[in-house]
Image (cartoon, rainbow, N blue to C red; front, side):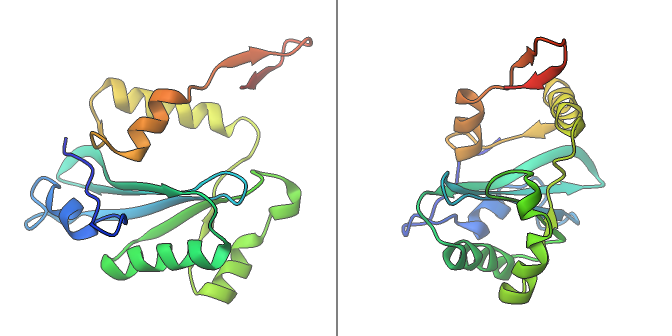
Length: 172
C-alpha cells in the first residue's frame, strides 16, 4: 500500500510511515508493536495499525538489525514508543519458547520500563495463527509495505508442514 519509510540515519521514519495510513489524521488507529529479540538472529520489529473504521491491518513499519545487545534493542523499542502511542508490545525472547526464557518480560519491565506481552509459543498455537494470517492475506485484510523488511522476510521464509514418523504434524 506504500513504500517502506526509512530515515537518512537508517532507522524507521515513524512520522512518514504513519502519514501513509489511510485517513491517519481523521481516524482513530490502534497500534501494536511486535518484536523478535534475537541475539543469534537479527533483532526485528514490526509496528501494526488498525482502525474500527477499516477492516484492514496495516504494517506501519518493519525493521531489523543484526548484532544488537539487549540495551540497544530496548533503546529502539523505546524510540518507537516515544514517537507514537503504542497500545501493546508483544515480543519473542531469543531461543523461542524454551522454558528457560519464560518470565523474561518481567525483567525487561524492571530494567527498561517496557511492558511486554510474551509471544504465545504454546504447542498448536502457531499453526492456528498462520492460518488466520493467511486468511487475512487472501481476503485483502492485510497490507504490507513494498520494499519493507517484513515483505522481504515473507518472500524468503515459508512455513512447511512436516509429519514425524509417528504422524505428528510439526512445523519446519
